[in-house]
Length: 324
View 1: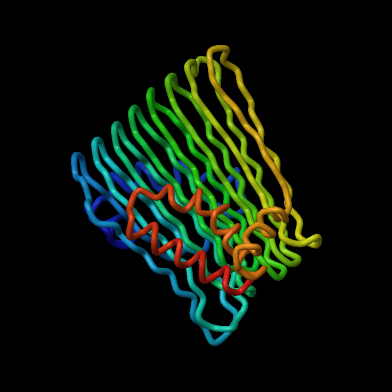
View 2: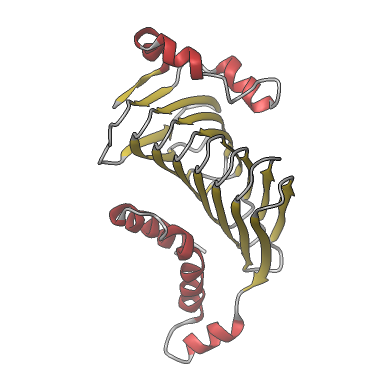
């Protein structure tokens, strides 16, 4: 496994970098891509050669620190060759009480029968503005699992575009948001089915408290000829106060006639009967609310296949709920 700067990778692996860098994040299609490409001075290169299975999770910690307001532009290129496997964890933190603006562009290439699990955990602060674009291209038989958890932020906009370009590819997207104060979190996803016998699943859950605002727009595109596609999309949302807002827009666009696709969204409030039931058994109202929220979002977090990592993320969720 190779982990180095993009500058170093351009010297050591010029053919690999030139074949992949900027090929998915098109600057003429998105302003964030153009801004990031123009201003990024370096980036992170992760390369897993053919047949290599990385057993341990690679953790990348991004810490924003500055004496003045700061703009940071992050670039990541991930390349997995045939039959390669890796697990990545990206954590975002902000240490200083300054205004931060961050852009992030991630390009992921998963070759035939490759397997990738990628986790993103954002724990910054209310003065952070984060715009992240992730692009994934999958070949035959590859599996990509993406987890996105937002707990502390100011304004966040995540865009995730996946292209299933080879027969039998599988992608799973899981998202969890717990927002309060005046936080805003937008998740926009596109899963582009271009080959036959591909599978995709999406599950995003939001908990909106106080005056926070959330948005989810998920689009599944099944192109002509992508027969035997199986795709499921679900967005469930909990508004804990009358002032919280949630906007949901699940979409299906299908041009093949032999597919199994579904989508749905729900927006509701705290289950008062369940809270009353738990209070009758000795819990306070605050404890009952927290327990209900933990069960609601735990359905997403516990889908992580690594038990220590799952527990770490659940502890982060519990710490966030302590402040609600």
